[in-house]
Length: 135
Image (cartoon, rainbow, N blue to C red; front, top):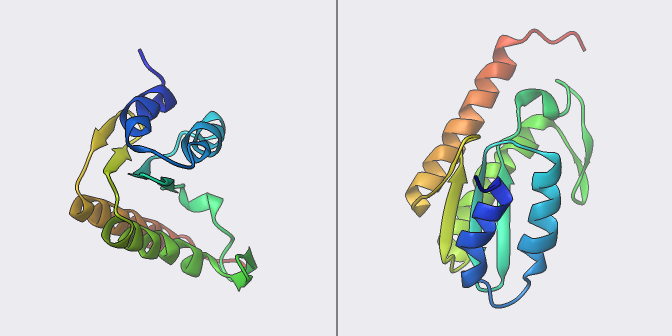
């Protein structure tokens, strides 16, 4: 049975003309350390991966952490999954979009990627709202 990375490589690599290291180095390194569900988009010039991490990976309630060019709380960081997927699948000339649900990888449409990402972020927000904050 092929590993998640081997399957990802088999499906994505034929579409990549430039920046192969996005897949072969960066995506592989991430998958060597993590087994979270994700959306993966392949362009001729590399890949994008948006992981669907569990709620406890994000900063604690009320905490801000260094993020990009400033500091952000967990809600802002989580929202970026929607922003990124929306941009990737509508603006980046994507050749292939894949979804890994934790068990298998399947090809999906842009609309499915957007919907799955919104379902993920909504689920995480509901989980945070159920957990009392003791900050």
